[in-house]
Length: 283
Picture (cartoon, helix red, strand yellow):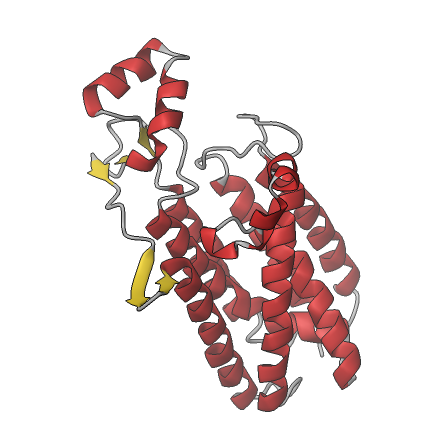
């Protein structure tokens, strides 16, 4: 059995200023985006100049933060945030939806594309392989915060983890089953999958490797974007079976979670786009 280390969510104290790990992970994600983006530009991809890449990151950062927060508010906790509207702006407390942030980035890319005279799919094909490492950094932030823990795991699983932060939820879940109550009594809590690390691996490392390799050869415009939609949708859909389901606007379900509902359209649209763009010649 492993026990979550319960890291201090504040990484650095600078007088009255507290720098949170969650914010540092966002900065790391943006830094990786720039580093890998500049590498691509220096190795034959001329869709943007380096200064334009810097500018587009600023647009994308706004899209991520605004879209991610609004996605959390609208998709997952509308009742709570509409009752506590000031907390919508407290992004340092966590609570960001990938799907909302994704829509925010798409809008930002479309706006920036019009500004510099670049096609939408040109830009999304360039951006897609740069995104997963940022997602990986975000999942590390989730793990450090001890949030978005997994579903109950068997004690036989070598990396089954006790999350002390989940104590109240453990007690509520244990009341539903004698086996879970026994686990609670034996270990002081329910052993869970460290699903943040599963998502780090699938949505981050595996998806990055697949997209980086796929985009290394000339592809018809739009195909890299389509593969991203399919790849992320599948990775998220699978990992949600190990993550404790969020209630969301459709209520809490152990069969299909809110994250899975939001990922299904990505898979369907990605497949449709892959077929559509597959009829075109490689750029």
